[in-house]
Every structure is written in C-alpha cells, then in structure tokens.
Amino acid sequence: MDLAIGEVAARTGHSQSTLRYWESVGLLPAPERVGGKRRYRPSVVDRIAVIDLARHAGFSLAEVRDLLDGVDAGADPQSQWAPLVARKRPEVEALIARAHAMHHLLGELERCACDSLAACAAEARAGLSD
Image (cartoon, rainbow, N blue to C red; front, top):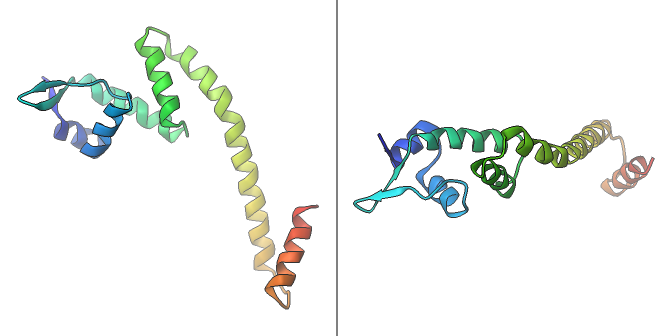
C-alpha cells in the first residue's frame, strides 16, 4: 500500500518539506500522484534510511545522490561506497586533526595568565607556529 507524504514523514522522522526538497534534488524518486497528492512506495522508507546513514557519515547531498544513482543503475553498493569513503576519509582525518588542535588551544587559553588579550593572542600565535 502506497504512503502519503505525512506517513513517510512520520515513519522517518523527517519533515514533509525535507522530503519534497529531497525529491526536487533527485534523492527521492518522484512519487505517483493520486488526486494531486504524493503517494510513495513503501520502499522509500528504506531509501531514506540509506540517505540518513550517508548523511551521518558526513556525505553531502550531491555525494548521496551519486551513491543512489549508481545503485539505481544496477551497481553493487560496495562499489558505490568505496570511492566515496576513499574521498571522505582524508576530510575526516583533517577534521579530527583540527579538533585536536582546537582542544589543545582551548587548554592553553584556560591556563592563560597574560596581562592583556593582545599578549594572549601573540602567545597563542607563537604556540600555533611551533
């Protein structure tokens, strides 16, 4: 039995506007219309679960669309995930390095005993170049 957009929204935890947006950018297939209202196949719930998984892994909507387009064209999921993961991993590693540097800097700022903010900034800049 096909699902109304409100039912899909309730089952997936996404707003109806998000579902309409994802349809407009090609993440969700255009549903049939019955009496002018969207009627989605039940499999759309599984597709949204894949979108959620990819988004939680940090993939952009364009990357998610590429993944789904490949699988829709018959490619196996692993061959679609592998290049996306290979491109995303360095981004995540850089983000982790930046977070570690921020964490270190926050610790330094917490222990700051400078007489002025300008002196603190100068000391922090010197520490960043080490």
